[in-house]
Length: 400
Image 1 (cartoon, helix red, strand yellow):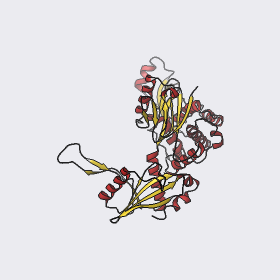
Image 2: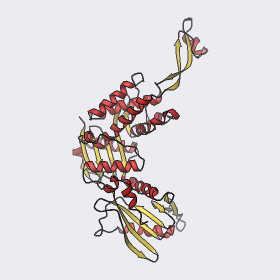
Image 3: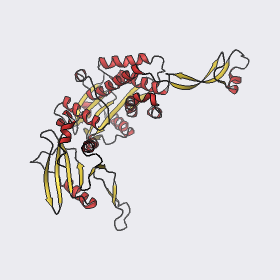
Image 4: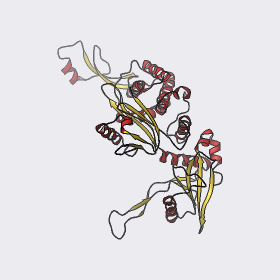
């Protein structure tokens, strides 16, 4: 039985709580490194500390569910606000979930993803089952397509009743459907929600004539949808997400380990940028790293890069900070202030805004410091209120 552990960002969990010995902890760390998730957990001597990543990790005999700490007071509001941010930034197009049933489980984040996969795939299959022309080779009793003479001579030497042919067959047993069936089968073994399992079993019944085989992320990544298959785009993206972040058991045709996580620092930045772009179309520019110093006095390996999160209009820099700043008692850190002054120096922008999430007050702007034609402001965005309505979120950018 899988042990469920639910925690939040920046919390510490002992190895004993996870049921890991030293060797198992090393394997757990290696699994995350293999999936390119080296920074999601901090492996310390006496336990593991979560960072600014949220989502679910299923490994060995436990599942670790990491919920956001900043964007909600309880598990339910955390998930609602997280899903709003993922939907708003178009990372996950999740519009409807059976929240009442899912909230009863101990692994809500993963269950939401599984339920969404089952819902959108079943709905799409009820409208259309994808078919492709697949090239096949078989030893037949009558000619179909074209004869492969070399193979026919080798296979049917002395047997004039059979002929070895190559032909195209319009079939549902293709890579796209095999991918959907494999992911549905794997998720059916993971879900603890009866309604979700029932939908996945309906999908497996629809795919009765489709071969069940383990599909890797590399194989599924090659799938190209034609114009008639665009209704499967969202479900294919979600299937790729599951395949990319899991370890596949070829024998059991399921997922043995799974890690689906989102970097909240990056998500908050993209969320603010998306909201600004909607309020001020064409006036928002997200940045890539810019090298500001190539070398120092001829020393090698002394180049330095700088990357403000958002350039707004022609005079403003906005940098997002995914951490709580309780105004007026708290103040930005010295590092944040120095960073913003560096942005002013190299980008020559007079208005500098530090943007923080909050859930204690409405979105607001406070002028923190103004001198020498430079104005440093603090912007806090109430993510709980934002999730209640997009219009409310956009109205709070009117001062810009």
